[in-house]
Amino acid sequence: MTSDGLLSAFDDLLIASFFRYEARCNAHLAKHAPVHSAAISKVRSVVTLLWPRAQVKPFGSFATGLMRPGSDIDLVVTLPPVRTTTSMPEAPGTLEGRNALPEETWQASLARCLVNQSWIVPESVRTIDAVVPIVTFATRFVVAGASPKQFLAERSLDKPYLGGLSSYGLLLLIVRLLLLMTTDDH
Image (cartoon, rainbow, N blue to C red):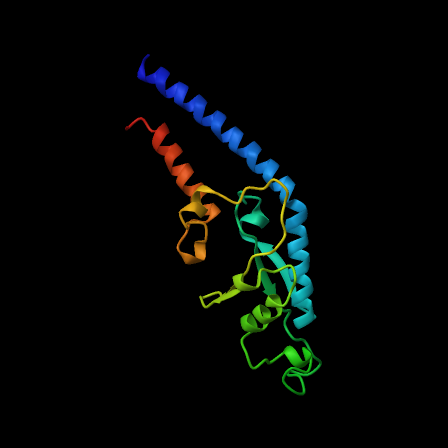
């Protein structure tokens, strides 16, 4: 077999592998969609209890559709700017009530509330101080027949905020590999 024929056969195997992986990911995500929606809804409920005007929005691989099996769901909590008829409210926290200026950080307040939720694994709740502070946790939601073992998780590389690879990072690695394979210089 010539090198061109070998490369063509390899390309065909790689493409078929990508299609199988895509089908597996799509089936996994479809199976887990109700659990993902429930988790986001529950987080919104907890955040709204603390800060009634807050919004919870997905971002990252979940929001872009690049989520892979085993990925976490990234959510951002935002509070709209305070608008009053005067330049400043009469007293700090007037619009937000008792939770406006907590004695603890907002992440600590959220973590404290999450620990007490029945759908949360309490020992999984952690706050991580970073440029963008993070509250991370695991839920008790289970999907029948789901397998939590993943290649990256087995190697402790599934948490980008702890030095692991993100979905986008994996995508870049795959694109680079494909570019290397398609160049005439190898």
